[in-house]
Length: 312
Image 1 (cartoon, one colour):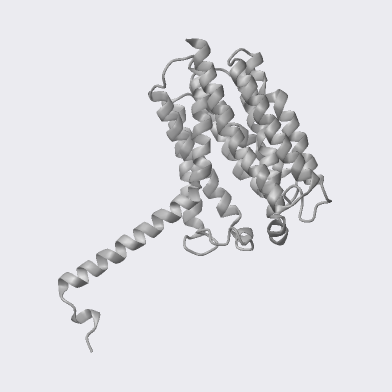
Image 2 (tube, rainbow, N blue to C red; image 1 turned 120 degrees about the vertical axis):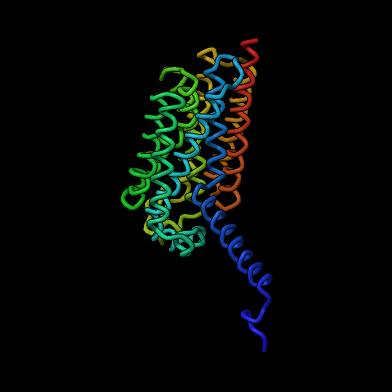
C-alpha cells in the first residue's frame, strides 16, 4: 500500500502548498468575520455622507480616504473586542455559536490583540492624517461600544440606549473629518442615526429574544416582553424620527426634495412599526427591519444629493 511518503517530491510539495493556502483562506475569512463587513460598510457610507456635507460642495479629497481607513480600523477593532468579551454568551446562542471564537477557530488572546491593535492604530492614524477631533471621537466610539455597551448587556436593558450612541457617531466623524466643528449640523446627523436605530434593533431583539435570554443578555425588550410593548416602543421612536430628520432642512443644508423624502420614508417606517405593535410576529418584525434598511440609505443619499444641488 502506497503512503504520502511514497509520493514524488513534487506532489508532496504541492499537497503542502494546498494545505497552507487552504489554512490561509480560512483564517482570512475568520478575520473578516471579526470585522463584520456589513456593519463596516454601513459605517463607511454614513461617514462619507457626513464628509460630503461638511465639504460644502467640494469633491472628496485624500482626507476622505484617510478618514475611511482610520475609522474602518477602529470599527473592526470594536467588533473584534466585542466578540472577545462576548465569546461565552455567543457560544450559547444559535445565531452566533458559529463565530470564530465560540467555534474555536481563533484563540481569545489572538482576537483581543487584533482588536486592540486595530483600534489603537486607527485612532493614531486619524490623529496624524485627519485631525485630533475625529481621532478623539473615534476613540470615544470604541470605548462606548466595547467598554460600556458590551459589558452592560449582562446587567441592564438600558445598554440598548448606550449602544445607540456609538452607532450614531459615524456621520459625525465624517463631518468633523471634513474640518467642521461639533455644531448643530453634527447633532442633527447624530439624532437622525440615533432615532433610526431603535425600531431596527428592537425588531432584531424581539426576533432573537429567546437566544438573548438563554445567554443571559438583558437586551430591550427583554426575553419575554409584555405583548405590544416592543412594537409600541418602535412606533414611538419612528414617530420621533420624523421631526428629527427635518432638522437638516431647517438648518439649510438640504431642501424640499430631502424634506419630502424624509417625511415619506419616516411615514413608511412608522407604518411598519405600527403594524408590528398591532400584531407582533416574525413577519411584522421583519417588515420593520426591511423598512429600516430602505430608510437609511435612501434618506442619506437624498440628503447628500440635495445638499450638493443647493450648492450649485
